[in-house]
Image (tube, rainbow, N blue to C red; front, side, top):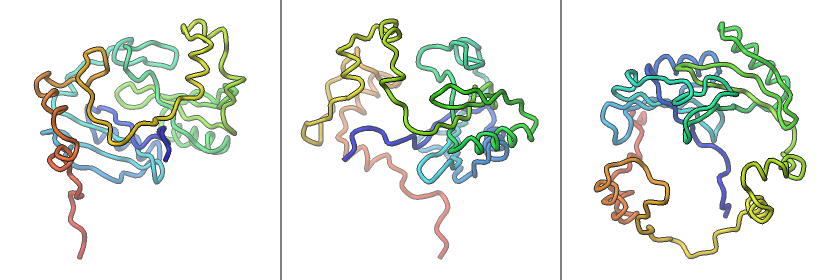
Length: 229
């Protein structure tokens, strides 16, 4: 059984106006809308999914009050691929296409909707085009032939800049497999570890619930539209 992610199931972006995002990623980017429903467990939330392939989706969330949250370049958003944003934010998003011809086809499709596109630019490991999406998204489409060779693309001088030792580099290139016994129990709360931003008492309560009970209590397995007879 694989012990690493095999791809992206979905990327979720906040929208001031979910219809505007659906129109952009459907009509401009060519991704069919496959789901739109009340967000599970989130009052007032709307959740959309657009298909990239049978295993990957682009997701959009609209929540009450989101439109009132300010976009601040350099903090919430980068604005372009060379600019900074706050740690933990998405600096830019690159979609994949399978060929150089597909990259040019995407450039033409996007431009045909009046959206400016820069590129392609050859980065060696991939070729890319760059453009903006709704709500100041910084977007890219890239294509690559073959896999990335770490011997050619891990620069020893940049390892030093990043504070990564030779021993750490070797470990990062070949992550150790998990060899424990499943299921692993919920670890004790450690404030030095990453945590989701829930009220502390509510969060600790969620962590104390057995996995099976949480799954049974908050799952929403049925689609919102009943199957046709």
